[in-house]
Amino acid sequence: MTGFARDSGALPDGSSFVWELRSVNGRGLDVRLRLPPGLEVLEAPLRESVGKRLKRGNLNATLTLKREDRAPRLTPDPVALEAAIQLVLEVSARLPGAPVPSAEAVLSLPGVLRAEVSEPDEAAEEAKRTSLAASFAVALDGLVASRAREGAQLAKILETLLGEIAALRDAATVEAAGQPAAQRARLLENLANLLGDGDVRARVPEERLAQEVAMLAQRSDVREELDRLSAHIAEARSLLASGAAIGRKLEFLTQEFVREANTLCSKSASVALTRVGLELKAAIERLREQAANVE
Image 1 (cartoon, helix red, strand yellow):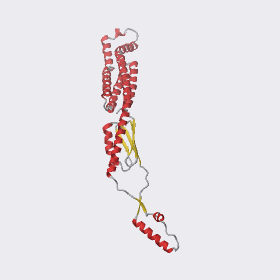
Image 2 (cartoon, rainbow, N blue to C red):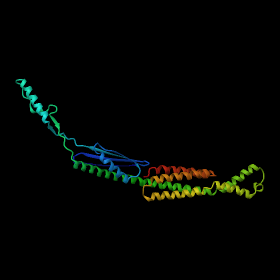
Image 3 (cartoon, helix red, strand yellow):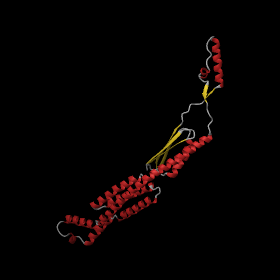
């Protein structure tokens, strides 16, 4: 199922962040996290939290971190500073009358000043990770809500398709009921063409005709397929009403729908029943496509 959610905030160090979560359809659950360097430690707990909320779909979660630009604090390197001063004094002594370089000039020499590196504050880093994880949970709640809204709409579509399949199943029942009589009439017509003039019933025993019609009716009996279709429709509606993660079960059930529809078409002895069977297969295919979107 598809969904989108976003959450943003600020951290104690002045930096800002944005979580963006996107999900699309997938047969299983595939989670892809894009985290800035240094925050890889968050990946395992975030994956675990997703696994508790989602069962299917391809989820992409991206964390964008914007750190506040601050001028680095500079501090003199004692060794380099002393060496620079000695060099400046030596050069000045060799150039009588030359002005003594200013302090700014000495400090601007390469290597004299260096950026001060502060020791990492583990408590601050832990607070940062906690804030980011909490924001991720908010975004995940939004994603789940987004998918739930889509699921509600999808449930209506699935129920409509199941209603269409049920109606076609009823139409197939009506058409199938008339197959024995149609087969008997077709058999008499074929015999008349083979035997030529005369009453077929006078030349072929009624008992023999009944046997042939019974054999044809048995081969074209689709009552079991129609009964199983009814059971599958009831099971699909039960799954929709359960409110649980039913995607895989529903996909498997649609395969059973397809099997029954194929058998019905192969057993059909009339154009009308075949037409209904083909419409049934088309409706089941639409159901199968929609079932792939269900969690």
